[in-house]
Image 1 (cartoon, rainbow over the protein chains, first blue to last red):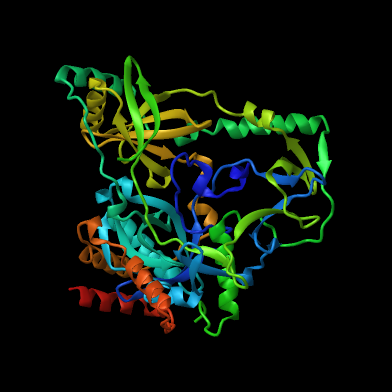
Image 2: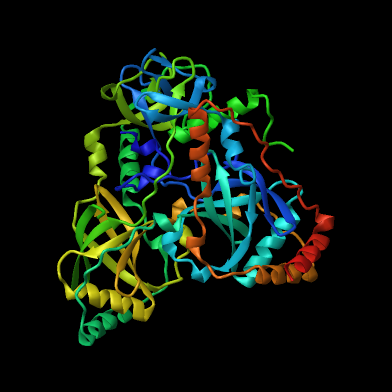
Length: 290
Length: 255
């Protein structure tokens, strides 16, 4: 039942877990820091570039029709745990954890936690699409607009993409920075050892068979027009909703004093991000601001 | 051997290619748990009722579509089922496009398609797509969801690229970026610099160095050693007035 509210991870996830950088509302940005190439440094923030298309259902309590919110919960004390009481732990033995703080995490690779340093550029056409993981945009912060435009324009002209590594929370990402529609688009890449080998035993086809297939492909060649394909499910659901609205079969939720909306906190990582930020805010070492 | 996620047939014209869907990527990373500071108990996510602040078990949860402030239309499971696509075992090919015609931002994930039977049609399709530098645009239904994708070929092997629907992609225009006047000199030095710093793409060169360091840190802590906190490196932004100078210096350094 949770699927509707989840982030990109599970939206089209029939297989294993897909890890993406934690999501935040686009306006806030997921991360901020500096992107650099050679001696040029550009202050930027990271925002999402895909929005999982979903009909936004809310989970409600069947007794009072009040919306539900996702909270971190301590099963031992049976109570909601506020962000400042959440810590990260690595399980070394069943039930035994080594606690790790946000500062300690940032200390692992201090060169990469606030800086995306483009060390080299490559020809975009050399990248096998299998490497692409998750797309984002980089947006310039105040004062960075000119050097941002320069990188966008120079990469567009040369048709090159920048490669860099950066660290967010406990993960290190290899990222590809490209110029797209006058903006810097960034995609996390898979490491090559994460790409599985393909065991293949296909029967070889004859030239004659290949030629027949080619002929029908040629007859069906066209330009890519993605807008032709839409998610019917969303439309079908909206139709059902509209019918019910006409029948006036609505329910009313009780009034509660306004609190922070829970929708952005769809997954564990986002909740964690929030908790880490709180930890940082209260911690002895100040991060994030110059 | 990766497990098979789904079995079906690629279909277009008179051609039927039986295939199995396999994972193409596997990530193995350090996983942390979230714990309660006070008792170190592993936390879990729990749905809480905003009104009475109590945990709500799954059987007391209902789905509602918000039509107005505090007003919802309830959806029961049967209604949600009505919106489900009809199940099928066919990957329907609708048309073919040139490779390179699809922006990578559309790619949600990639699966390997392996031949499910000793079918020559698989080999014929793989060879044809490669020769024609083409992708097969297709749709299919898997686990009660309708997907849109593109079949690509490495020559001998087929892959299924799961694509995002157009309305899921955030347009760059929505970022509200203003274009900035640049001098021709700045752009040409910038371009020259990029060309000088260009290398061949060798993905295997990039390994996850962080993972090992993270392990080392965890081990140190497990042995009771203290971790000295380090401040993250911050770079000083290049001021607009200093951009040309920075570019020229960079170019000299790269030469």
